[in-house]
Length: 126
Image 1 (cartoon, helix red, strand yellow):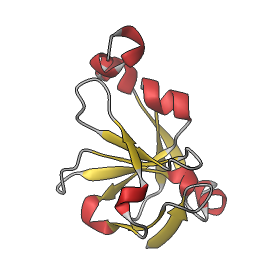
Image 2: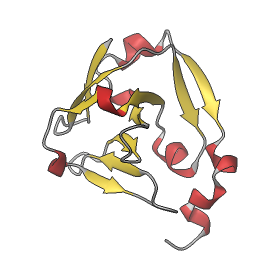
Image 3: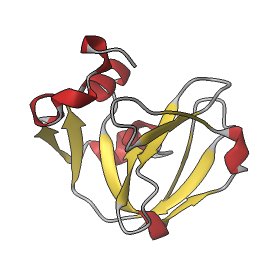
Image 4: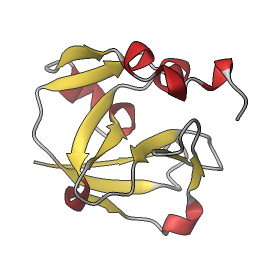
């Protein structure tokens, strides 16, 4: 199923194809701080509809994943390792129909805090 979404101001827009019945709620430092609910999307099924140079990115820890956000409104849109064989993690709250869809999706927790403590920048110098 095809879904569209964007940041709050609309400067960053995308289209993604995925089927899911669940959202991932991760307790790592960045997901907790930003309040994201995640949906994995195969990288080839994600299409940025705006110029990629509009995005800003943030990486920390081992700098394996980049968290992309709109520099205008600050909303985090997705995270990616840059590996086309891996899924990007889409901030489900940026989907146009988030409220309609999410009422039918189960929330699953992911223990990123304990699984990846080396990625917690609050306890190390960046």
